[in-house]
Image (cartoon, rainbow, N blue to C red; front, side):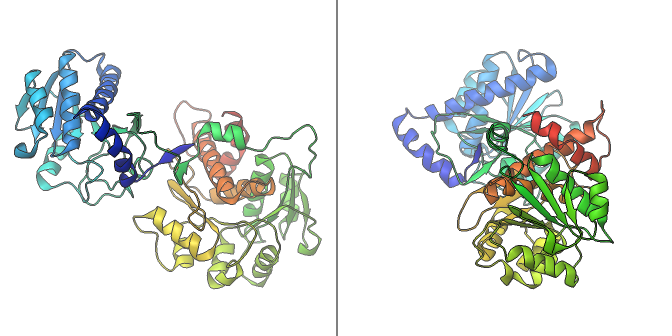
Length: 474
């Protein structure tokens, strides 16, 4: 599991180390890791460190100190190192002195021959966009195509939300220390490398799924399992207008686990034609027993759709609500308030606004948590970075997709079927949503890369076809 920490949590963890270590030791520890990462970056791009041209753009405070110490270490390894001091009177004294002793040069502009820039302007305590002088420097760097390595976070991005408050640095690589921060999932940070500086942070409530979690937690049949004990997923989706939603949602549930899928709705004939293993009926009353319901994709918002939503929510089973089900629920939120069984809502931004009364805004984590608490349900807010929040200060998950290939019609129907299957298998709501979102993103990326060598447009049907491959690949 990957964990994310607030700036305050990082500072609290640093405090005892700062008291126990010699003055400046923690900064030099971080700078050594930063210099090592920059050395690898230079090696990848240019073949080594010696003779390479680097420039540190230095702000005031510890972030600038990290950059100066790293530039000093690279200078000692043979790099030609310069530093542009945005506020010379407030540059880190010890770092600046060491840089000068090592033969580093202070410059007024980034030299034209520079091959890599270190962004040491603003750290995790900063806020707002870059000031005009820094913005001008990095505009020139970007125009020149010089890669940037950011110290802790790209300057100008908010550490908690990843939002840009104005001009900001665009980094090829961000090197951070001690623990990941929300910006590293939510913001444009390029590749992110975490340097362990000995903070010993405990697990946090803000986390992200990794491949090992899929291996450990994705349902697999045991020697005594049968098709019923692995979970029976019920699908209430699709209509005569949107039969494809039923096919995609049901097919994804079939692909996600080895149990059984039951379908009830007007697209029963089309569903069975695509997925003959599905038990399908056109009558909700004869749907049969299930362990979880998925309701909403392509369902319609008429009386038939409303009846299906009410039917599912009146059970004591886990329920996932998506698409048309969310539209119906926005008009009748009382249907989920106080519900005891796990309930997962999967809105995109527009559906979120209908449910919450306002758009998610820049702080998508806080907004998702508020809606989860308001309704007492698990909320999955779709996006390039999916945000999942459990109610009552429970866990929240961030899932960066690594691309936007899943932004295609019907992709959400596939995700709903996957989550529903995991709920039927007995996984908790937040974990089911997070695991499914992780695998869904990998399936989307894999579908765009198949057959290769270059990514090409994909579709929900292709994403569905890569679910099993994605699961097997972890």
